[in-house]
Length: 379
Image 1 (cartoon, rainbow, N blue to C red):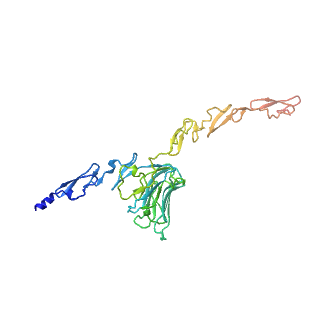
Image 2: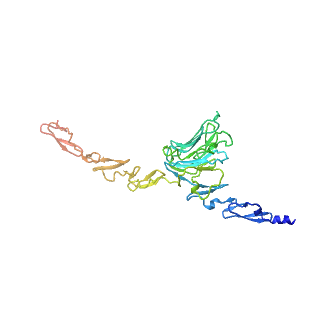
């Protein structure tokens, strides 16, 4: 009896040779139990829950998002013409991958946003002639019921505005299904594929996932901005292990293979520096495009055209009227020419016959006839 009592008094923290307290927690024994004194930013009976975002693990300008296990650094990034990122699944992804979700902002009309292929399976999300396009084939190569899925957005996306893109498997529990493109605008309807294909599980391991282009010399690389891309709810992280303060401990991950850093935030070209607008025009940055707001009297793409064309009084003997970016002159009596600069010579084509002399009048003439001739024209 005494021996059993002593055993009860023995520390459970010592009996359990490996401390039950995780993440640096200190174990204290209780009667037939133990408790963990957890470090800051951890919680749970075993200090197993880490409040990762309170540790500020992400780079500047990126936002930390806590997951059930681990964390992600969320941000928009800017892609230049030579930026292509490569990802691999870590081989531990067990969920079915049935969606692709991201936001994009660009003015480039032909872009390969995301591409991957493995054997006969492939997926490509692109912008073609300004419209978003999904092309997908997945599933057993022997299945005759599967054919490539192709979806087009009902409206262009290469307009310099942000667009949310959601591509979803219509029946995510099925081996094959139609795919849906969620409307880019609330006034649009869902776009659904005619054909059926499988999910994106072929991306879970050992496949190069290209993001932002097809390589530095492809001509299809993105110039613009992307939010984080999520495949089946798993983020393609823009930050590798060297760019975050703590390892990402979540089990299911896509790892960034390419080492090139990204430019956090959405930054367009400096289209208003120096100011392209002439004659005091104000430049408005429309993301890789500018628009000039011109002062009164000026027009054109760069305010290079004088719209107040009558300001210099070009009509010498007449009245000026503005017409588009030009003018016209209404001449006073006795004058002609583009600018009413020519005095009309009414005797230049007179009809005085038999040696009659032309006498200038007000917008007319008369004939001074020699002897023996009379009449208006001396006939």
